Image (cartoon, rainbow, N blue to C red):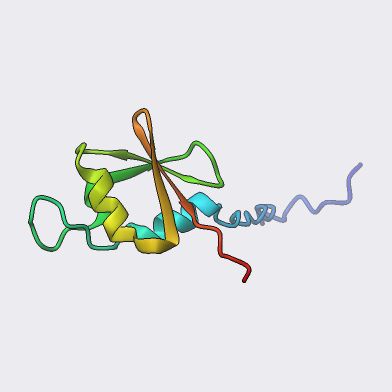
Amino acid sequence: MTNQDPNNLTPPAAPVKVAAPPTVSEQIWSEIKSREILMFALPGQKVSDFCTPVPIDPTRCFLVTKASATLPALEEAIGPDYECTSAEKYIIISRKQKNSF
C-alpha cells in the first residue's frame, strides 16, 4: 500500500530544463548577424540577410551564403576581430587569436 493521498489531484512537478550555455559558434553569430554589410551598393543590409548559420562545429561559425559575392563584403563587415575562410560551400568564421605581447 502506498502513502499517497488518493484525493490529492496536484500533478507532479515537471523537471526544470536548464538552457545550455551558447556555443562559440552561436556567440560569433549573435555578434555578427546584425552588422551592416555593403552588398550591391544597397544601404541598410545586414549580414543575416545574406548568410545563414549551419551547426557543424561548436567552436567555429559555419555560414551558407545566398550570393557568391558575400565573402569579400563579409570580411569587410566583420572587421579585424574575425578570420574568414571559404571551404567548399561554407564560409567559416572564427575569432582571431590575440597576440600575447
